Amino acid sequence: MTQKEIAEALGISQSAVSLALARSSSVGAAVRRKVLAFVRRSGYRPNLNARALQSKRTNLVGVIFPDFS
Image (tube, rainbow, N blue to C red; front, side, top):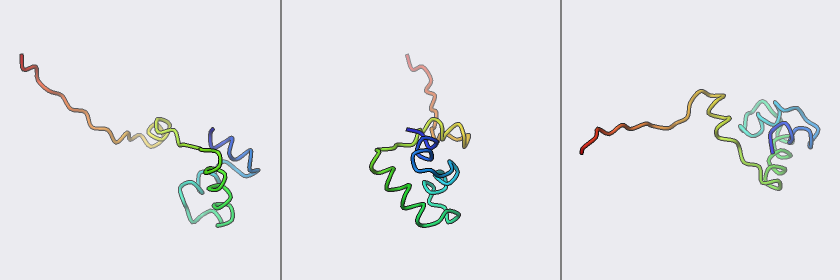
């Protein structure tokens, strides 16, 4: 399930869903409760790959070991 699908199901904008999930003060408390309740019922899980692409950060560390043979 995507944020767009959540927005369509609740009849609100996709940006309102995004702000509610980020717990921003820019969205009203009633909308935030509505979104969070729907997310709990539906089992929504954010796509971490999409988040990494959007933020341009993966929070992964690469390690290279020399060949010890």
